[in-house]
Length: 511
Ligand SMILES: Cc1cc2nc3c(=O)[nH]c(=O)nc-3n(C[C@H](O)[C@H](O)[C@H](O)COP(=O)(O)OP(=O)(O)OC[C@H]3O[C@@H](n4cnc5c(N)ncnc54)[C@H](O)[C@@H]3O)c2cc1C
Ligand code: SF4
Image (tube, rainbow, N blue to C red; front, side, top):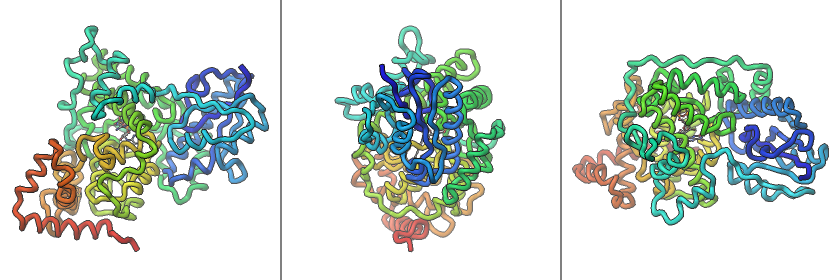
């Protein structure tokens, strides 16, 4: 084997995997670069940029301590602006027989690297950090009319023998314990305070750089809360196992005034950049259940998110790209309102979700899906703009996971490939799941007129607009039946109000 220059991207920070699999210190060299092209293709949250740059610098230090020669380009206007320029510069410093790169997680970058023209061949290595390969997912998907996550998830449970009895039956007698989960938040439990991390000098330096170089990106780095090494991420995860896992399922869908994260794990960003290993995380949760540290509903609920949903959305992305990104089944084209970028709205649930998103780069699943996503769906906001917003604002956003969740699950723009029905809900759902409505100037029980919760009229307007498309979906028949049973005068009142509210909240023509 000749010498290799190994290119490590900011979300590929796992030792011994991907392009680092057969790497040998002293023979192979490594290139890592903080480049404008990656940091600025959308207005990434500053927490995300700080996390990635700091984690890259820590990873570089670890690689050097293992004996690797690493060409590390810190963010600078004089340094390489693209990954290609970084690879070219590193090749001049360390000539090699080949360039090796693990396949990027975004289609855009995969195309870009495939087109690299370097003096030596470029070899793309499959990403072995996922639990289901792209080929395996494709084989599962082939010939199926519907790609439902639940069936995929069962296959994965069997493959990894997780939460499985000796006889192949699911542990606890069921594949899915969702019915026991998902209680609304009534502020009866106290939410454990998350441990805080004091940034070390690498992170402190990166925070200063990000504040200086990305002044118009969202994110308040005075609140930086993220682990930047695998060791720290594991400490965070162990803390979650001890303090939150027990109530994870119960409050998985809850919406709270008191806490941005409730009992959620905050591990997506670490999994997505390679600081945590998905199988390891699932096995630790299974062990917690076996040791009696949590119930089966909590363990199964958590494992399903990672072994099921996370792998499934990646499978969908690679099966359907690049055409997937252009889909817009419901023809949603209304411009996204400006207040998505500052959270300045008097709808309390949205204000809370948007402000924490912008400040921290984090919102939990139900805030992303049933508050922000639900509003975007009901209002018919432009699919491309909304997807690009989600890609920008969250710390854990990478297109392979962000796009199917936003375009498919939240916006129903893929004609039901991801979701068996639109996740559309009125204010009553939001009221049931939490306590935001108590602090809101609107009333979740009123549908039209001053003070009525805008989600309510928008919900009926959405159903009436898309009735013809949704009428054959059995999961929509009850709500569509409820709409059609309303008197014409009531329908008219709701629709007139909905259109007026929509124009106020998200004007069709922004000046
Ligand atoms: C519109 C929308 C956009 C989203 N964008 C992203 C994104 O850019 N990046 C991202 O990692 N997740 C995304 N998700 C999925 C999910 O909301 C986040 O993974 C989760 O909120 C992260 O917080 P947590 O680590 O505390 O998760 P927990 O609630 O503690 O869940 C545990 C883990 O399960 C995995 N998981 C749970 N649900 C999903 C899902 N639907 N898809 C993939 N993985 C899942 C994540 O790795 C997560 O860390 C999105 C969901 C929606 C509805
Ligand atoms: S009343 Fe409506 S807008 Fe206000 S918090 Fe409740 S659901 Fe949200």
